[in-house]
Amino acid sequence: MSLLHKFLSTCLSQAGEVGKVPLIRRCFCGQSDFGSKAQAAIHRRDKRQRELCKAAVQPQYSLSTSPKSFSIMEASMDLLHHAGIQATHYLQTSYPGSQDWFLFVSFAADLRNTFFVLFPIWFHFCEAVGIKLIWVAVIGDWLNLVFKWILFGQRPYWWVHEASFYHNTSAPVIQQFPVTCETGPGSPSGHAMGSAGVYYVMVMAILSIMLGKNQSSWKSRFVKAMLWTTFWAIQVCVCLSRVFIAAHFPHQVIAGVFSGMLVAESFQHIHSIYDGSLRRYLGTTLFLFSFALGFYVLLKVLGVDLLWTLEKAKRWCEHPEWVHLDTTPFAGLLRNLGVLFGLGLALNSPMYTESCKGKKGQQRTFRMSCIGASLFILHLFDSFKPPAKVELLFYVLSFCKSAAVPLAAVALIPYCVSQLLSQQDKKIV
Image (cartoon, rainbow, N blue to C red):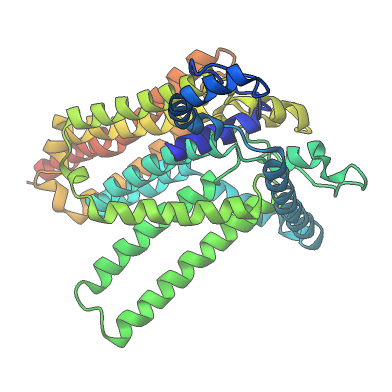
């Protein structure tokens, strides 16, 4: 219960409602002026009853944060955010020539590239790793959404304009870029969390394939050192890129990296994802969507507007065209759930069973052909952008587009490749 109260206190404080929660101040205890003897007698008579009432009411008082503790917390966060603004300003002024590199890294760390590039490669190279990549990416991004709704993280590009921290001094000048104006809360960083989770899975997979059970030789230690050095180098680049473009504060990207690693490590011990039925995939998809939607409605009833960041993005983004609907929380949620549902459809389809599980599925020519065809077709498919004028239509088409990605890479394309290779074999014979 104390965690719930702390959580609600945080929500209400961010919504500007701290101290305004109506508290239950009466428990049928009788109210008295202790200056009178009659009321003092009432007080003695009802002492036990009031003690019980006080115990019952006590948890509700924890919903409101005292002004002193709230001001200390706000001042601490202002200092943390100011340090982040200084870091962004330093990177932008000291390394202006690295702008293209940071923009590329931020683009490459997007989960869209996991679905359209890394997944088809790994699935046809090592099926289990491809499946794990999808689960880690989807569950990790779903948890990231929930964390963002709870933590109410600011973003540098709007905080620097609204913070009272700079009321006596001029705020540092922060440059914006086309990928800066994301519309969701900032903590933890979704790019950092997704990148850490996905690359953690790939590093563990490469170690398992290359080393197997031989983990003690100097070669294995060298390979481990090289892979983990590469992993951390990538994470540092992703974190710096998100800070450079003023999309996140440093503490947000650090939290994202470690959260992503925890999600990926947890899936190292979950083996039921490799043989999931269509019912399990459908049930998981519905559960994740229902929980997120129910959580949103609950906080909405409590007076917390979870879309508060959208207005800030529209207000402080230098170019309105840089505010994209596909960066909203629900757009990301439906995109990820579409991928998970599409994977369930594909793995339980006859086309997948006939092609990938058949005789052709073990041939290197078949696998390489599937990888090449998948990358080419999915690249063309990614160029389709759902119209954003009608929000509901955009969400529905985003879900369908995402579901089509694993369906094509796992079932449709392998089936077509298998048929073509079979026809060529017949002609040779």
